[in-house]
Image 1 (tube, rainbow, N blue to C red):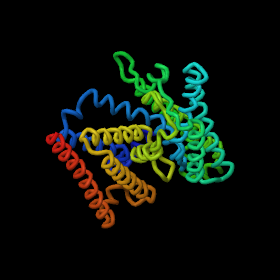
Image 2: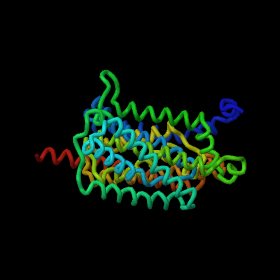
Image 3: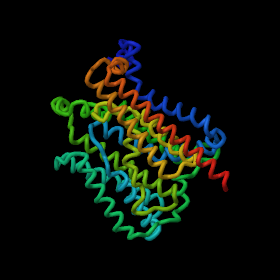
Image 4: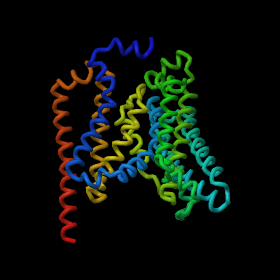
Length: 374
């Protein structure tokens, strides 16, 4: 049965539940824009500021695409920040110390990321180490290699071509990193919806035992998604080095949390079997816009960390709860909201949202008082 035929048999409420994962981040983006329209319209709604938001989001787009596939298979990868740092440092040494052409260094950096993903996949499938423990341990290994190689040195002043990958712009067009990020998402969408890798990822995440019994080579395709994840982390490392025109061993410490949060907020189920590349794009944009809004409101970095963490936890908790209701077949979203337990949860979410809004308003007011004193 084709997808249109399947959708034709759904009621309006079922269709709403089907697309709620995408509507959620879009609604949060709209609420954020409305808040900034009230608090700081002049500074936030500038073309130059939206250019900054897109460049910030573009850095995470390749990893979000690959992480969507990883989480769809019921996996997780906590090593991507270290892989990005390690590959970027090796690329930097190849260009600056050994005189390799920039394109050779970039290609080898992405290939090294794919190798790291291959190692992760083999540890998980061959040694039977759980994804969480295996990738967390390899995160320490890759970060350790990066520290050993860098020896505390900050590599900087890369060739113009590498800088262009991170922050360049095509004349009369959009920034180069945005083109790269959107291209990877388009490729990821095709992989997810039109290839065996995408179909098998959904089957493995839905029921790995059943997938294996039907002839799906589960371990092989799990390795494939980790190789894709590693290569996209390598690409992100190159983009980060170009954006900053510098790299060091401690770079990209929060890539893991940021990417996983964006993917889950975008509707990919932590229980596996369901994902959304378009939703991951919305999640990446939401987090980039939120962080930019906190900076625009001149809220101190420490408060930015607090607000960002609360938003991420609240969003992930809400979508995890939503997906549990969908998985357990308890009547969908509208029916779930009618239970006493979930009404309490809705009140708690409203309190959290009020606290976040209060933090933003306080930060804006105190920033205004500080400016007046100066």
